Amino acid sequence: MSETPPEPQRPFLSVLIPLYNEVDNVEPLLAKLRATLDSLGRTYEVIFVDDGSRDGTGEKILAAAQADPRIKALLFCRNFGQTAAMMASFNEARGEILIPMDGDLQNDPEDIPRLIAKLDEGYDMVSGWRQDRQDAKVRRTFVSQLANRLISHVSGVPLRDYGCSLKAYRRAAVAGVQLYGEMHRFIPIYVQWNGARITEIPVKHHPRIHGKSHYGLIRVIKVLFDLLVVMFLLHYSRKPMYVFGTCGLVSFAISIVSFITAVILKFYGDKTLIQTPLPTLSAITGMIGVMCFLMGLLAELSVRTYYESQGKTTYGIARRVNL
Image (cartoon, rainbow, N blue to C red):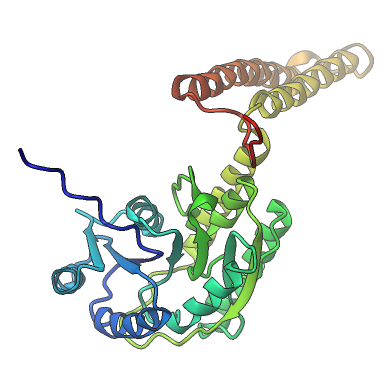
């Protein structure tokens, strides 16, 4: 009778690297990673996720994985975006400590020991801060600074550099995190929802040597939309009726005020109902109010289905004693 082979030992560290058309950066990045990770004296794995590259990046990481079992390769069938690649690497990682980073050599693997040392001080997540960022001053750095301040203010999680991929997480801190759109930069907010302790340290940032940046100003708009979604999930994911109900009440208020104003104008302002747009505004806003309330009820049903069908709870437990 054949025996089931033993499960491989869980590594201490998982380094997660999404790639898209970075063929010239794979080998130098891997060399730097090996030098740094081998010096730690701890077990590790490096997970490369090729996000549908067309320049031979996939072949490079496949060759690296075949030569070293600690190197893992995951190839997408097409380009799905950095957030999807990041989510895939989180799902595949087996380490107790997870460290995502960019594959363009702008993040420095030599910062990894410093991130781990900071985790050992009792934190659940350590975020990198590109204090001396080597990017275009206006198109990248200035816009990023504005975005970071906005996200910190709205979310209540004060970080100087949400866009820095180089971070360190304890596995428990990211348990249950699901990412969509461009939401990989908002992982610290999700982590705080899990009750994690978060801090930030300066990290090195190098100018890009090979390849070209895949970021553009259009991403700013995507980030703003995703921030709205995150804020909705943060404050109203369990009570969506508060949002839809508030919109409905505002619409009803506008409808009532418009109707009363139209009646006053008819009897005291010598204007018939067809001479002013107020009756039309009243009817439209009234219907919008009804639709908002109905959508809120449907959203409440969806929330209950989400939690009850999957056995999820609306709370999180930090510790149990005698239970």
